[in-house]
Image 1 (cartoon, rainbow, N blue to C red):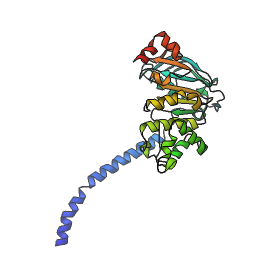
Image 2: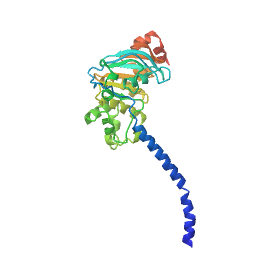
Image 3: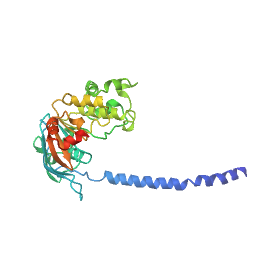
Length: 295
């Protein structure tokens, strides 16, 4: 009788979990189905039938009357026309929403332009394979991806064949080597998902170091020092040429102080290049760049 009463009160309490378990199963099944459908989708960009493998020798980047806008929306970029010479450091500066990041995404073919051409060493990037294009460009985006792995392995994500000494040198260049060395496991420290065990500033510097060890002839830095203290920022920016010797570098920032050392500066406003030149020449004009600097 005692056992019967025990089960009588016990069974209903267990049965109340069945609806929750069923709902969880249905939700998981739907999510899995959506994931499978997503994975089966054709890639957004298909290489042309006769697409070439891009081999970058000089790293000359050229935008020729390039315009872009999402389908059915107004143009985000209009009539971009500029040339970045081999080994040159060129900065894109402007307020948020001016088109800096969109310009860099076009170069990576995350998007394709609606009009005009983008050339690397004279080759239209839409006529080369996407894989070879991106293999030649090192990128430090605003939000870098970090895996639940060691610092060393996360660095090798940029270049699997890089030697340990090259990684140490790159981290030293951005002022991280001593900080990593002070950790109990050093470069074997597990970063955690998304790099949660390092500060935002450390992750940003590590992203720059990862571009340094990348073998690409072209480097893209999107807001590279937005979370770095002013002293470290100054150290990195003053030594861009030394950090990326012989490489073409494009930097995007909404802070003029970040890009004052660039060889050439493109000032974007509402998706257009409204001014361009060196820091000194743009300051002397007293235009939009001057107003950004004076804020």
